[in-house]
Length: 148
Image 1 (tube, helix red, strand yellow):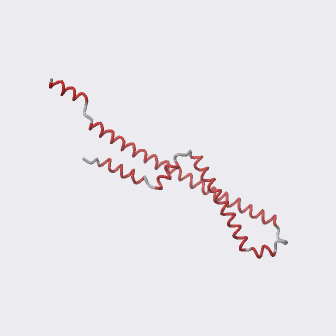
Image 2 (cartoon, rainbow, N blue to C red):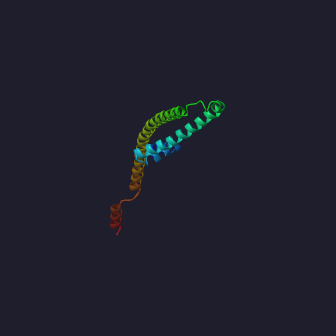
Image 3 (cartoon, one colour):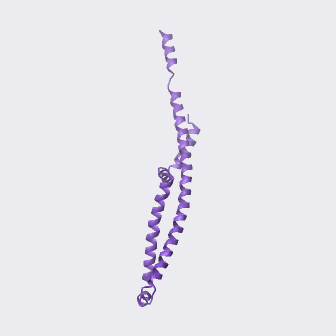
């Protein structure tokens, strides 16, 4: 006979076992601080690379102007402006990343604990079925004793 509760629990567990769920399980392998720090490090590398590419693209588009006016330009001012913009953009991006990954870690913790709870219920059901399937040792002895 089919155990409806077991089928429902197994369906819930299988819904969790997706590619997104694997990311949640992987996130829970880290401590919160380590997970967020790692993601911030990846974000810092990404924003730095994008900023360098953006500045190179801007310089490439304005190359003729830059070459004509290079001797008149305040290079220290330009460097300070680019550095200030980089710092502001990086800090804003990293703050946003912190908030996003803090929330993701917290939500992953809730989802994984629910998944573990479902798996524990399924295990309890299987253990109960095994106990029901095994004959009681006292019953066998009584039956044996009455036939002899």
